[in-house]
Image (spheres, rainbow, N blue to C red):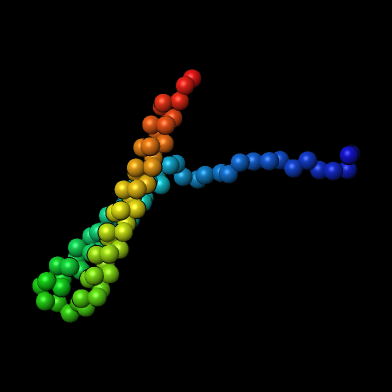
Length: 87
């Protein structure tokens, strides 16, 4: 097999650390929640904001928060599983 080139096998390369990804995600969730709060306050103040936009913003905020909460729960469960593994 002299003529064949050996291909180097590499694992995936990550440019971000897990903690950086989590911080970015939490920042995005915070921005979605702030946007929903601003839309709600604007509607309550009588500004020209359609109620449907407010409801959609609130649902996006709720979904983002619930998703973040479930990811947190899965990460904690994985950590606990690893810590309980016999050595």
